[in-house]
Image 1 (cartoon, rainbow over the protein chains, first blue to last red):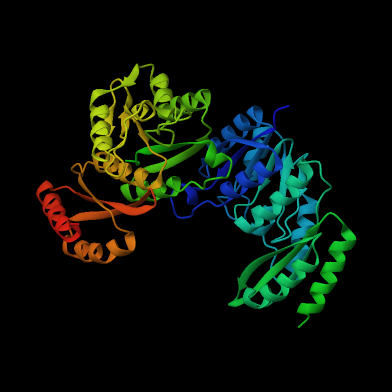
Image 2 (spheres, chains in turn yellow, purple; image 1 turned 90 degrees about the vertical axis):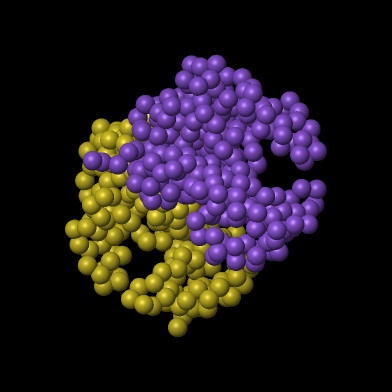
Length: 240
Length: 240
């Protein structure tokens, strides 16, 4: 039996202009190879509706899975979700579950959940959400198309969720702790934890807000009990 | 007047499997932006005839220029030249001018110009050669399609030739000196030369053969007199 096939669609003018070097393609390629899925084609297109809709429809009809990267942020040129809805001919609007996730996230940070940010809750009818433990705004899966963020740390986290489902393994459960310290202070204790808790993985996704450094530590595993226990220990270490 | 448009086609299983991370796309993107040419789409396909022929024909009909990278080496899976000939419906065979370049190159190194290496002299009818000052085996241009090597140093050198022509500037002239020393020894004197000879550029393309290190130093410029004068000085410095 031959392997399942896949294609990737990278969306973004910043890649085609050379301003940003894409990192997601190489990551996806390695992950799919490990998962026994053959990546057969990659296309990179600009933030252009016709180009995106055309590529989505061509690729989803030719390959078993299509992974997209980019164009799901809050700005006017983030049109991937609408283009995917258009490609499938389905309705799209702000959806309650996605809005609730984002509303809670911004409330907890004391940030306004404005109209631009509500764009990130636009989900095509019939899609299921893809978990984003790093920055909350979800991706989505519609039939064989997986729509994910362009920011490499978010893409990686979303892909981990998706691949866990595709390869028939148990779905990954995640828990996130925000630590308001620089990664240099986090790395040591986190390394020790990672050695101890071998059945979960620890990811560190740094951020900088208002000049202060921090990181979201994401714990993932198939056993919720272990994820929660590791989270408890992590909390104990980084509590003030 | 809007800018001319371009697409890129990257050919190679090693990119899609994640074994190699492509570097040429990012380089091309930056160079085209500088040249005022809009890169609109990139496709990465495997070493598969149908995929390559289809992509070449789609892209060359949709965009002003098409740049390809990869699949022009000596092994059985290097099928780009044959696929491009097929896409254009023209004959392809080993061509005398390309064979002569390669024959002289291998003779000067005491290496056999065997059947596998002769594959690299297969050029479609009607194509013009693209200079390869790094490793000699030429690329070629056929109509609006520029077929170049996947090895990043060679891709860069070939692209420099092509872009000099496309942007209406004078063609670049090159001269190459092979220096059998490590780049660590070459860098210092080369830096001084580069400061002195401002109307030519110096590129250093390292290699390792039979455990010995060396580099091809490529001098490029629009004025042959200056290129030759810089080459003389380079020779003087690195004699022995």
